Structure formats: structure tokens, C-alpha cells
Image (cartoon, rainbow, N blue to C red; front, side, top):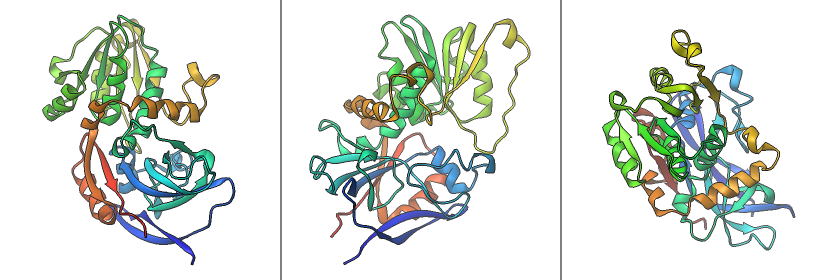
Length: 326
């Protein structure tokens, strides 16, 4: 009997559907994965779902195993955890993470999956893609013990960046967000929280991860002399205006982009994308990170769930759970 799979497709602005599609049998160096859970990125996936990926970024924004093309119809997503049902013997029966769209079964090269450590629960493992982004941001930021750091934006990536920064010796980090509800996940991670008007100034390092242009402008204003601002947000097709006059040059401030598609320059010659993902999964072995998870909801309800999430964006990673396949 021919294999089939169900996958989530965005087919129009703010409208998705589950589609049945054929699934080929795995070849010798491939694996058949049955999905257990996947994660919804509240940032990038919201832009895709709304059809707000600019044409100039259609090629760069393609994710691994994406089907279709921007703007629609497109099968998009990059945080899937499942169990290998067929493939090379060392992987059969193991839980794995894959940068794959939301789909209940899929066949990919064995090299595209990374085993999930036994100590990391399935739902928490969907944070691997976000943790990989946060790890790359920290590599770009090159923090030093004793520095004063501020993370502007308490979404999942911002909180994970702050969580990693807090592990550096004598590095003081504060998370800044205008939403007072964001204080709860900050406290769960042991992080200091401040409203924008109370944000600490004279920071050596500021990471901006809010996705709001006005917050990026404020982030610049928080820097000390020769401080550096790491821009981790992506604005899609929204223009951004920055106050680069005034003290920007006099204070010799640095504005540095960070994007997960390439390994940060400081590590690029020594770590591959696969190495970075393995490390990201290992860093999820901390029960406090469960505070970043929302849901779960059922895969069958994903079209309605995506519409709901897009209408009321939040800070947490939404977990989608899959029913066992027959």
C-alpha cells in the first residue's frame, strides 16, 4: 500500500489547510519519520502565514524541505520532532529533530535528522531551532565576563539569548519588554525583567529581538560608549527607520546583524550547521525552559490554531502534537 502523509499548507493570507500527499518509501540513506510534535515560530511563521515575506527574500527564506513557493501555496516550518520508523539501523526507534514543516510523516536524508538527547522531553525538543538561533546570536555577540547586557524583546528567541548570556560569569543581563506578562517567563528562567522606561542604560551589549522598529531605536539609546547592538529581529517587508544621527557616530556604536542561515563568523571555520544543532539540543536539558512552551494543540486543528495565533501573537513557542499513525 502506498504511503501518504498529511501536511499543513498556507494557501492564502491567514488561511491554511491540511493536505494529503504521497510519500515515497525511504532509500538506503534516508529515514521515515513519524512526527510526535512540532513547534510554531510566532515570528517567522506569522509573517509567512500573513503573506508578508518580501519578494526580495523568497529565495533566502526557503526553509529545508519547504514545498511550494512564496507567497502561496507554501508548506513551511522548521521545528519537528519524531521517531524514526525506517532507515539506518542506529536511528530506527530513536527520537530525532528535523528542520521540517508541519507534517505527520516524512522521508528525509538520514543526515538531516539529529537524535534528541534522552534527557530532553519531546515537547521541549521543538525549541531546538529557536535555541540554535539564540546560540548563533550569542556567537555573534561575543559576550565577555563582567559586561552589562540587555535583551530587548521577551519572545522565545530573546529569552533564550538572555538565558545563554546569564550563564557567562559575572555578566549582568536584563530582559526588557513593554508587556508586563513577559515577566513571568523571565522569572521562571531566573532572569531580571524591566519595562522599557526602567531599562538599564550604559550597556556594553544590547540584543534586539522584539521585531518592533521603535524598540530597535530605543535599544540603540541604551548603549554605552563603543557598545554593540546585535539585531536578531527580522521585519519582513516592513521598512525600519533608525536615528543614526545624534550620538550614534560620536559614541562609536556598532550595529551588527545576526541571522541563523549562516554560522556566526567567529565559529564558522570550526563548527558546521549540524554541530550547532547538536549543541542546541544539548542546551535544552534544563527543566526551566518548559516555561517557553505554549499549548499543546492537535495537528488536526492546525489551520484554526495558526489563524488564532496570528490574530493574538504571544511570546511562547506553540507545541503541535500528532496522533499516532496507524
